[in-house]
Length: 592
Image: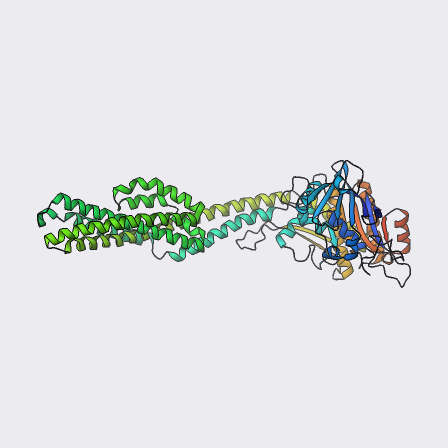
């Protein structure tokens, strides 16, 4: 995108207050002037101009402008003519409604906003991003790089850092690598695998803490419980009602078997209900523990050995229940518990009625111990079944631990392969990195007659730490005596100019062709500023593309250099204090 012309329009006065045409190729100096030595060049609107450009390119408008009564009373519309994708069009923001953006295509400028396309702020930003970055960089947003393209002295120049204060280190290094046309996603991609490994290790740690016995010990316990259950069932089935009590054996046996079935169903439903309640409790703490029961099919097959045949048809329902449970979690279990409570209520009523019938028979037989004996044996069997279920859960946890270990090993292998692939990719940029180093050294020698250092490294040291930087492209620049504020500022400028010129030369890189520095030259020696600006202007014009914007105060340049810049058209805005204030950026004072 080429920035062609900035215009300030007042609806209140119904006229254009100021117009600022830009050099479409080369250096654009926004100059702050003063009438005499006692006058002040600051406050005339240099930074305001940069902030308006940033606002037009999708940045949030500064609170100062949204609350400035003088500015709001003027009903100011700022427009920016740009060239992108082989066509000219206009961008606009209305200060009084900063939550909207406007675009005018294939037309001459008009200040009737009804003629413009209107976008809410979010959609407007998407349009700007598409024009500048295209559709290919979905993992890099223009918002993430805008502050690096439009750097300001207050926040954008940090000592001993090429980035911006308060930014996430991973994102910042990703952005810097992107701007330098280097591989920039390696760290992010490797971190995704490392995060999966660490999550599995956390689950492994939690499961290990719940397992107190070995697989052999658990299987031995289960065998003992099964043996006891077989004995109890044999004893229950051995009770011969007809022989002992001379009753209708068929009726009494059927009632006994019916009672046994009811007891079994009550046990099964209570056990399932308890597991549902435990699942709900566990889900509130951590969803992952539900997956401890992932081997549900063999677990259910084992349960079939202990419960009546009448429930075998429920296998597929239980299987579907488990799959559905993982997706719908708590609400599913709540519904199931409600259904179980209804069934339990029905079974309890049947049990009460059946026990009354059997008790009536006891009176006839003058023996009240039979049901108690049967109930006691059934209760013992229920207790044993519960213990077996607990053992199976522990065995399932052992199986899950084995699976986790295997998954971790697979992920570590994937990470090693990915790291090697990314290392090879980075190594293929050797020539490009050499060009970056050479360009930075050229700027350093031009400014300070000494070689600077532009160093790029790839971290391929694989680690499991959460803050691991495996895959990070680390870029460092240094100049002799860069502890000096002036030299440190120039180092940051030269880094930006290095990636900027390199990207203009590199046809296969990103399509960013403008760079803006606000106040970035306030510290260095005046003679150094002019050398760099002249070199960059020539370089850009030789390439026939690129715009470099910089704000300067008049007294920051030597007179000969200033005359040169004026003569050769470097200066696109001369802002100063005048009695009528028309030469301020907006064309009026923002304060009383």
